[in-house]
Amino acid sequence: MSMTLRRLSRAATAGLVAAAALTAAAHSAEAADTLGSAAAGQGRYFGTAVAASHLGEADYTATLDREFSSVTPENEMKWDATEPSRGTFTFTSADRIVDHAQSQGMDVRGHTLVWHSQLPSWVGSLGASDLRTAMKDHINGLMGHYKGEIHSWDVVNEAFQDGGSGARRSSPFQDKLGDGFIEEAFRTARAADPAAKLCYNDYNTDGVNAKSNAVYNMVKDFKSRGVPIDCVGFQSHFNSNSPVPSDYRQNLQRFADLGVDVQITELDIEGSGSAQAADYTKVVEACLAVDRCTGMTVWGITDKYSWRSSGTPLLFDGNYQEKPAYDAVLSALGGSGDPGDPGDPGDPGDGTASCTATYTRTADWNSGYNGQVTITAGDEPISTWTVTVTLPAQQSVSSLWNGTPTWNGNVMTVKPSWNGTLAAGASTGFGFTAAKNGSDAAPTVGTCTAS
Ligand code: XIL
Image 1 (spheres, rainbow, N blue to C red):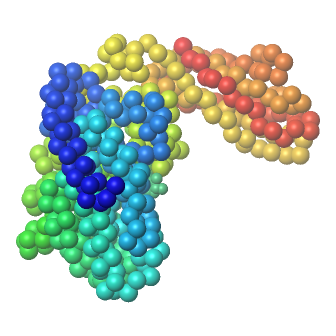
Image 2: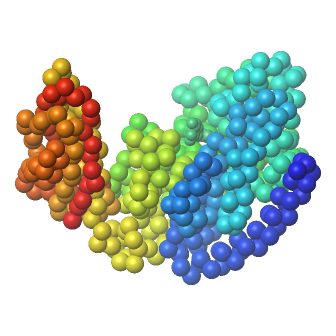
Image 3: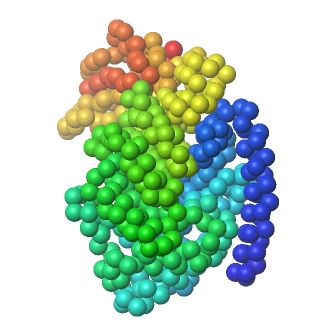
């Protein structure tokens, strides 16, 4: 299919889908028991990053379609994915996501046009004038292909340094084209697709600090000189080293006061249980308190596919069960599937106690090893748990602590020694010493059962 035909057919589809989206919004206003419908009730979108490679997984796509009203391709629109060699554009994976989003009436955020990372090496080896042309060609290539179909584009991503300097980050663009590359990118973008909102996106800019001050000054300068910019994206990747800032709302508001929309673009918060839920609440409340905060995007659907998977930073666990953080977000958005609503599978109060178990070898020597099994309660409190551990046939367990085993051949079923009570999301564990007897293989942990 020629480029022109593809563009025409993409635009035609987009028109049909806009009508479908209106119907979906009107319908969901009654229910408001999903993230997308509850956010719509507040005049906001609620989005997620999506990977094309997971769209074939039924639970992934069902959760996406049920809960979210916007998508951001997690990697598929980046320079390395779309223009791996100069002038050769590949849109297969990104098209898959855009087509899926349109079939569901979801908005699409374009991510991202000019960024130092996930940048093919050919870009870095160009001289200044060639690089300027290549940057504009790249912007025109992507924005042309998706013209009229993208809600907001992250035109430039992460152009400022971390820390207190407020300086621009070194990159081929910065180093060869100077500060002006950002302005050139935005001007090119506006001409390429006047319907898309043009955003600057960055991280560690969520509170008031030297880096966000530098971005603020740039946006202020752009607005005063008529450089086209419509929105600022706050990535909002949080963890214990980088917690939700106490001046988050204030920071969002000062950008909004410059005359741009603000969006939370890549939200994830490492942690679990009620602490994680409380942090998510803070973020949603900050956005809702700022009129020009038009929507939020979480950086993935399920913890198992998160780029920071070990920090379990998302709203759905690895089995697509709603976590306490999900309920907190839904309730902060004014949704009706609040904790305790017995109609919502996966909600606290739905009567489904659950747990997960993971195994690690904590010590190792020639003839034996120590194993540790960590038990984590699901999204509601549990009063007891049971987990099976299957050992390689030769191995034998010489001692076990913090648990009581019963044996069936080489399968041990372990229960708590005394009190198995765990709060929602809380963890406990048991340990054991095994003799290898010639087999160094790891035991297999079976299903964790809770009540
Ligand atoms: C991350 C993706 O989630 C990963 O899959 C990939 O390996 C690296 O990039 N800031 C951004 C996002 O703007 O594009 C990054 O996404 C996370 C940090």
